[in-house]
Length: 483
Image (cartoon, rainbow, N blue to C red; front, top):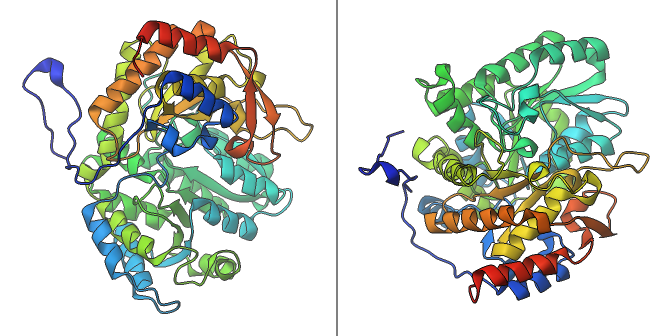
């Protein structure tokens, strides 16, 4: 990747290596209206309407800007039900990028997780992983399995200098396999760019070591590559052995080492859809029958063919450092801005977006009153910014009904790729700083309607007391007639 420096030392900012040719109008409601919209949404940022959001930083899943080549490719899609050339082009792209021979299509990442769980997880079995993701864990526990997390201790420390905080704790992995017995382990899952601990990367060395241990013990190795794009960038700039390797070579090493790889192209490839890929035909055949049952025919797997064409191009673009660097560079810029303001952040900056350490900002709010969710609502009140709670609210309750407290209480401010301008990122930093300076006003939340599964998606909450009205009043006092 080429390096572009600015002449003035104080003006070192990330430079977009693209130009914007299509724009979409945004709306910033007055703070009083934002408060009302939040109430209508049950204090759940997932339930806010996009028309009422100024900066949608909820996720980078399915909301990244596609390239001109992706949009153009959509026009040549072959919508034949069987024998589709679109499917052939996608398979060719996967072979080129990952070096794998076989693929099963699915409509997105969690569909892949469903098929993996149906095929390999039996009641009483364990799945080992560096860290869980919400839907992954839900599919495994639904099948009667259990999840054991084996991330290195540094991964759960919000701010330190460890470059690969998503790494497996190798000694613990070996000991856990010995304690449980290989036959009781469904598979070992590596999550690139660990989502729930701040988008922190995993080193190539660690991934290959995990795969080797799995092979030695006769256990399946599974890579969740949904966040691999950012992870590849961090491998290239932080890992010595990767600096002279091409991205394709790194991808092919992973394709060769792992028994199975799956991903959501809502993240990897900036399209819509997902896939399970492998060089092991026997494993693919074991899962194959579930595709027509749950997804669609084997040539599309629930995906719309135009999205498959965009996915084929997007995967190839993942090999370009100029493309994959934009997200991590913008994330680092936002994290550095907020860190300079004194706002507690997850550091070093990872992928996905900037992760605000709610546990440190509002320590007066206990886990059971959902501090990260409360802080996320404060960001919306202050700036029309929609972030995502990544704390206790995102966990599942224990079987006895008690809360499973999250390891960290975070609010993720995602940075969809090629979507926001630098002035908008600076606006976000400014409003988060204001919330931080007024953090004493923030209170907790309690349930009004709590779903039993994946409650964070569509549950409804209400504030404990009138703290949101007080926060809105303080905003109006400080900002006058500004929106």
